[in-house]
Length: 326
Image (cartoon, rainbow, N blue to C red; front, side, top):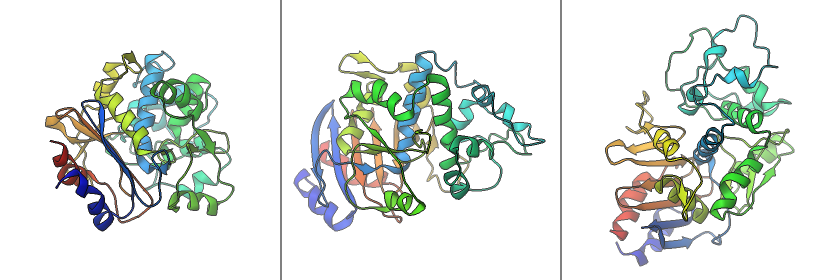
């Protein structure tokens, strides 16, 4: 397929795609929009938000705000009182959160209990730990990951969006983001499922802490910038934004014991697509992807509006898009 055929293919086969941006050798080689979106419009990138938060954690460690990924979670919350009899929570580290191997009580994300609480971080901490101890089992969570925003705030004194604006978005030329607050559960749902373009916003809790597991809105060109920063091992236009050590550690493949992983492995909130080729991606529901292929020096970003039957578009990127640029 030729590049001029991509637009028709998307309309016929991937109707909820809003934007695609592809960089090769650091230069934009393709950028197009669908569904009434403009190049600088944003979509809710869903769980691809996690990839951004991993970078923020790395920056905080680079700057000495956080000692290391082995720092205990409870060291950031000395004012938090665990539930009676809870011991496991004291052994949970930042690394456990980043690799989705933190132990939690119950199964699945407790959306209602966390999102209806006055303090989302405290509510998430209430689910951390449990009787089984540190099992190191892969347990993918989204809303409970709010603990990471609490840690970043305690470590830096900055709200999630402010930290991202200063240390990541501004250096990359990404427009300043603002918090978005849902006034009701209905507004929360509408934010998630809306098909219309969004502004540069980040869904936040009542305390102004951005949700780290979802909630960030970005354009595909800005997502591509994030991917290029990672491909460049933390350097952007000659300036180091994040350490090479962090990028390397963030993308180190770790086995995933899940039938839903499609054989992929996991790093620090990034999926490792092909460990032998060091290809990785931040993946969000509905087909939002930041894909990084160091072997071919290609970054592909796809933004999409909500469609629950689409979980990722790695196959689309590798089988349809990339052959057009080889």
